[in-house]
Image (cartoon, rainbow, N blue to C red; front, top):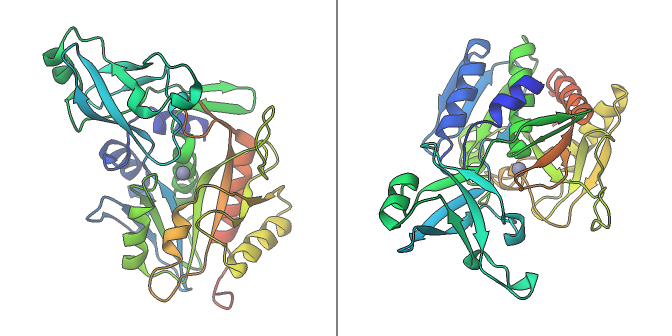
Length: 333
Ligand SMILES: [Zn+2]
C-alpha cells in the first residue's frame, strides 16, 4: 500500500477540483470491477454485484487547499482556505502547488499575537514580480492550490499531505483489486467535496440507496505532547467510530465492525471525536435513513502539509474492511 499512497498523495484534488486524482483512481480500479461511472458532481462509483443487500463503502477524493481570492499589485495572492478546520497558523510556511505546476509559499503579515493570525492576514507568494505575472502563474482569482507533495516513510509511519483521505482511497482500491467475489451488493464511492461538508457523499447515497454504509476516513489522534482530549492513538489499530460531531454511529453498524474486528483478532480502538465528521454523517440522513458507521484512520497533524499515519493501522483497517465485505449481510441490516 506504500507505493499506492505515494502515487495518490502526489496529485492535486482540492474540493471541487478532483479530476486528476479521480482519473488516477479510475485507472487503478477499472480492470477489477463490474462497472465504474462518474456522477454529475464528480463522485467515482464502482460496483461489484452480489446477492445480498447493498453495502456502500465511501472514501473521499478531495483534500484541503487554498482558493485565490485576489491578486495585489505587487503579485501577492490573497486566498481563502478550502475545507473546514484548517487553522491559519498551520498554513504559514507551507509550500503549495497549482494544477498547472506553479508553486508558492504561504507568508504572513506581522501580527502581535497568534490569535490575530486569520486567513485574511496570510498571503501566497508565487515568486511573481507583479500582478500580471502572478495571475499568469497561478490562474488568478478562483485558482486552487494544494499542499505540495511531501511523501516520506519513517519506520512504520508515513508522512504526506492529503493522507486524509487518500489513505482511505488506497484501502478501497486495494479491496477492489484483491477481493474477487462478494456476498453483498458492493458499491464503492470515491466521493468529492467531503472537506467542505460531505456534499458528494450526499448525492451518491441518494443515487445508490444502500442498506448500510461505512465511511473510511482519517481522524485526529491525541497522542502528541500536550494534545487535546482525543480517543485514538497511532499504532493501536484502526478506529471504530462511536460518535463525532455529525454522526452517532448506527449501533448495528458499530457492533458489526466491533464484532468483525474481534473475530479477526485485529487490534482496534473505539473512536469518539468532539469535532469534525465524515461522509457517513451525510449518508445516514438520506431517504428514510441509512444505517451508517465509519472506520477511522488515526492521523497526526491532520489537514496540514505533513500528515502522519501508521502503516500497521492501515493494514489493520484493510483487514477489517475485507472481513466486513466478505460477511453476508442478509440478516444483519
Ligand atoms: Zn477526511
